Length: 117
Figure 1 (spheres, rainbow, N blue to C red):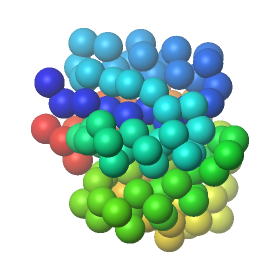
Figure 2: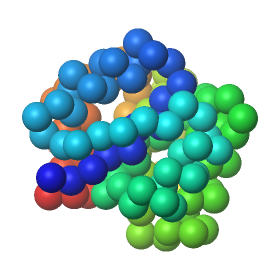
Figure 3: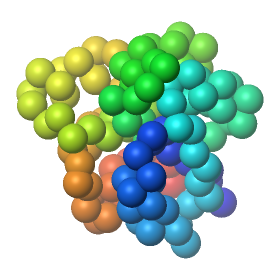
């Protein structure tokens, strides 16, 4: 089963992601950007769902660092900030796709499936 790293500091948002992903993928969590970088390089997920606003290192900085180390790692931005400028910043940082919170289960799973089948 494919493994997804969910980089999300908010417990309720992580809980929502567990309901969406359960039965489809294995998943594990990073609670800040530094932990996301560490787990991406040591635990080798198939894809990362990256919150953009996190403590210690935000999702933009974490994405840039992960992409410099693992250029082929698919990273999907998850953010409550859904302005075009936020989408542009995420894509410039190296995100492969962008989902606005609250994310629907259908949109989330369809987006993931574009990168890992």
